[in-house]
Image: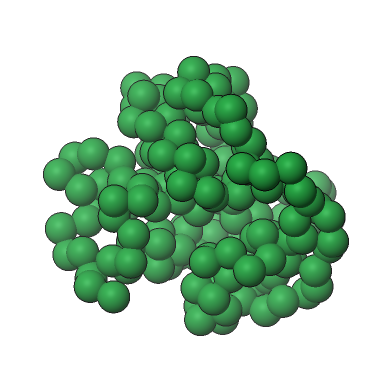
Length: 178
């Protein structure tokens, strides 16, 4: 895997999420069309992706319940991960990792690993010492999570629809203690 050294990873402010919805939507659209199992199925157009960022993510970021980390190359968003921090009162020590995405043209360059490290650092800075996530069983992200120290809790069968074909896929639930 070749490292991409000219990548900048950082958290976006709420205003930036709103201002960069087009770029974020292009990233989401490209990842779904490349087969990513991140809650969407085909047909999925750019308007669907924009609506997700504007109606689901942006309000959560504005409320302080979600952090959006991005990887930028030449000032353009090429990757993203979300850290959900609006947890129930009995789980203030936990964060949930959502939607790790790297644009198909920028994969296998260490960007996902850098996004994960940044999200974990951010979680630590907020006093969170447990991160949970789920990923489609057998997806390319699963070995990455394992290599980063995430542990498998179990597998839930028939959890989500495949983005391309009419079948149900399992999800693997994972956690990491920071």
